[in-house]
Image 1 (cartoon, rainbow, N blue to C red):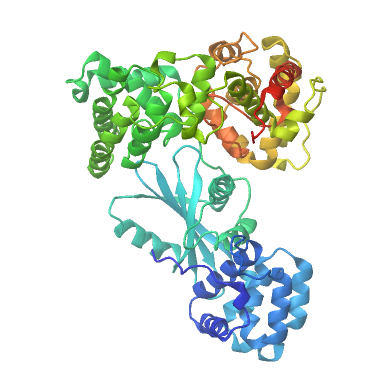
Image 2 (image 1 turned 60 degrees about the vertical axis):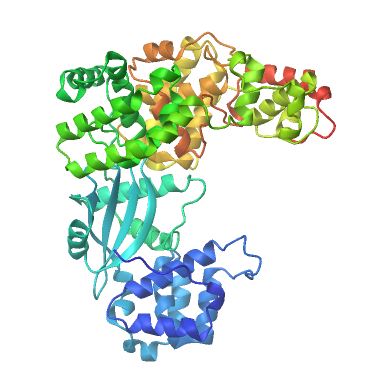
Amino acid sequence: MNQPPGPFDPSRADEPELLDLLEEAATSESPLMLLEIASTMLASVDNPDDDDEDVEELPPIRELAVQMLEATPEETEPLVRIWAQMLDDELFRHRIAKMLPTPKTKRLPEWIRRADEIKPFRAAAVVSPVKIEETILLEVSTAGRSVTLAVAVERSGSPYLEDAYLAEGPLSSVVEVSSTGLPTPVDVVALSLPDAGARLREVLEMSTHMFPPIETESWPGTRPLLEWMLAKLPNGGTGYEIRMWEPEEIEELVADFRTSPFAAALTEDEISHAHLLFEFQINYGNNDPLRWSGTFVERLMCDLYPRKIMSPEDELLLMPTTLAAVVRYANNRSGVDPVFTENAIAAIEDNREEYEARVRGDQPESTSALFARLLTGIDDDALPLSEPLSDLDDEFGGGSFFGDQASMLAEIFISSGAEAVGGIDALQALTDEPLPTEGLDTAAVAEDVVDRLNSLVPEIRRIADEVFDEPELATAALRLLTTIGRVGPAIFRRRITDRSLLAALFWIVGKDNNLFTGQWGSDGGMTIRELQNHLGVSSSPKPTAEKMLHAAGFELYGPEVVLGDPRYLVSRRRQRIVAHRDTYWDDLPEDWEY
C-alpha cells in the first residue's frame, strides 16, 4: 500500500504552494488527498515539534481556520469544511458555516459539500497466520468515492498501533491488493463496525503509552482522522481476546511435543526448555504457543530469555536447539504456511551469536545492576572486577563513590528511596502516616468499566486484610485500580477473570511495597505462589500485571516494581524509606546529584 508523504508545516498555511495543493486536492476525483492534508495539518497544529526552535508559535486550529477563510476563502473552503466535521465542536461548526463563500459553493465536489455524511462504512482485518501482526482496514464512505484507513497493529503482548495511513479505493480493492501483494500469506477476517471500533480504541490507547512515541511517515498525522472515525463507530464491540492458558494445557503441549518426531533427537536437558518457550509465547508473544514467527524469535533470544531466565550458562546455551524443534513442531501442528517456519528458523541462526554473548555475559553489565549486586552481596565472586573498587572511580565519572563505602551506601539508599516516591523533593517531604481508608474514586474512569471495578472492591478489602494482614494495602490497590481505569481502561474490557485481575493487582502493589519474600529488603512473608493459591489462580500473575502497568503508563524494569508515588506505599514501607533517608543523608558526597 502506498503511504502518504511526510507532515505538512501549518506555518505555511497562506503560502501559494499550499493553496495550489489544496486546489489539486479539491478537484481530485478521490477524497484521499484532501483528507490527508486536513488530518496532517490538524495533527501538526495540535502537536507542534517542540524541539524545532525555528517554528513560530502557531495559533489554535480554530483560529487558523478563521484566518484562512478571511484571507483566501475560495481556496481554503474545502479544507475548512473538513475541519469543521473532524473537530467535535458545534460552536466552531456554526461559526464556519456563516463564513463559507456560499455563492460559489457548487463549484466544489459533492462529497466536500456533504462532508457531514463522511463515515466508516465497513471493516476487516488482514491478519498474519502467526498472529504477530495485523492490519485493520476501515472503509471511509463519502458522498463520492470511498477510501480505506489502514491501521497496522503489533500483537506481541498487548496489541498497539504501529502506523495508520490512507489507501485509495474501497475496502474490497485494498483487501485484494493486501492478499496478493505481500511476500507471506495472510488471513482476511471480516469485522463488524462495533468490533472494529473496540480493537481500534484499544490499540490507539495502548500506543499512547509507548516510549519513545510512535512516529512514521504518516503517524501521528492520521490520528485526527482516526479519532474522527472512532467517534462515529458504534460502541459495544469485542476487542482483542487474551486467552488464559492453564498449566495443565501447557503440560499437555509439552507432553505431545516430547513424543513428536521433532523432539526425537533432543536430550532431556534440551526438552526441559519447551515448557518455558511455550509460556513465553503465551505471555509475551501472540498468546498462541502453536504459531511462531521470526519477529518473536528475535525478541525472545535477544531480550526475554537471557534476561528473565536465571539458569546455569551451559543450560541456557541449549535453548536455541530446543527452540528450533519447538518452532517446527508448533507450526506444523497448527498448519501455518512453511514460509513462517523458515523465517523463524533463519531468525534463530541469525541471532544465535548475540544470544550466546548475552548468556555468557560478554555484554557489559549496567551500572545499576552492578550497584545492586554490590549492595545485596549476591554473586560477589562473579563481580567483573580485576582491580580495587576505588580504582573504578574514573570509569563512572570520578568522585569517591567506590572508594568511600559510606558514600556509596548513601547514594544507593537515597537514590532508591527517591525512585520509590517520585523524586528527591518527594523523599525529603515523605512521612510515615498510615494511608486512609478510601473507596473507589470513579471520577474520570471510563463509564463502561465502572461496574466491573466496583464489583472488585469487596474482594480487594478482604485480600488486603485477610491475606496480607495489611488493611492499608486496600487503599493502595484501589488507587492503582482507579489510575488504570482512567488511563488504560481497555485492560478491563478484556476477557480476563476477576481473580486473575486481582492477583495481578496485588502482585503490583505487593511488589511496590516489598511484601513478598525474595525481594531485597522484604518486609513481608508472602510468596507469589501463596498469593496465587489464596486466589485460586494457577498461572503467574506477572504477564497480566505487566499489561496493567503498561496500560497505566508504568514501565517494568527488571524483577521489581517501582510505581514512584507515595500514594501507593503503606506506612511500614514508608517508615523504612524515611529511616534510610535520615540515616544516610549526611553521608552523601557534597557534589552528589540525583
